[in-house]
Length: 283
Image 1 (cartoon, rainbow, N blue to C red):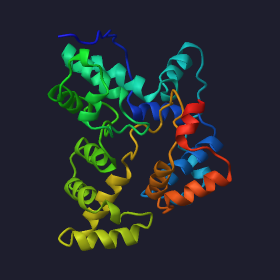
Image 2 (cartoon, helix red, strand yellow):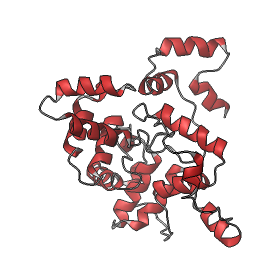
Image 3 (cartoon, helix red, strand yellow):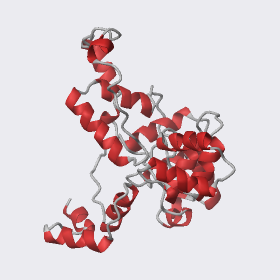
């Protein structure tokens, strides 16, 4: 059997949460405020809490003096920030950290290259087989086994077919809590009931889960709000991907803005912006 030759290299990787923390530490106050606004717009479940409970004078009593980081220490920290590494490179580097055979490793590498810009695997196994060389001698069972392994990589939710599956994968890998079963039920059966208005969302969810107390439902919604709708978010992209009109409509819908594909196409044309396939060709 002819398989791809894979060169394995052991490297130390920080998970996505630590990489994001390092990036935040490097931000100025204005940059941090802009980042928070982006988080709020990307995830309609996030809420900005009032911070007027303590004054700056009271809070400053508990803050440690800033420490300047430079030299080799600064270089080591900055070299691990996600902006220095794109999403697929981050996944490829994890292959050697999992107990995979050479055949499984080769298949996982192939699947990583088929992930879309959001970190989803929207192509079917059959489509992937159709677009790989026959001499690789791949089959459906091999790729399905590799897909199961890839879904265990970081960040959680990677290689899901869609948003629902990605959220389910993240919940299943979260710690045990009383709200976990309710959160899974909401994602599987009532995700369309969630919007930016917490009280209205809670009322709609309560109708679907009348036997669950409000406290548990609140905790379930908090758990869902903590998840990442796009596994690839926060990573650098090696090449910017032009969004199609349909993809833009879907992204806006996730953020609570219902705009039809035709409306987006109309405004795109009015600004003389080419269609996505023409922008890809131009690059």
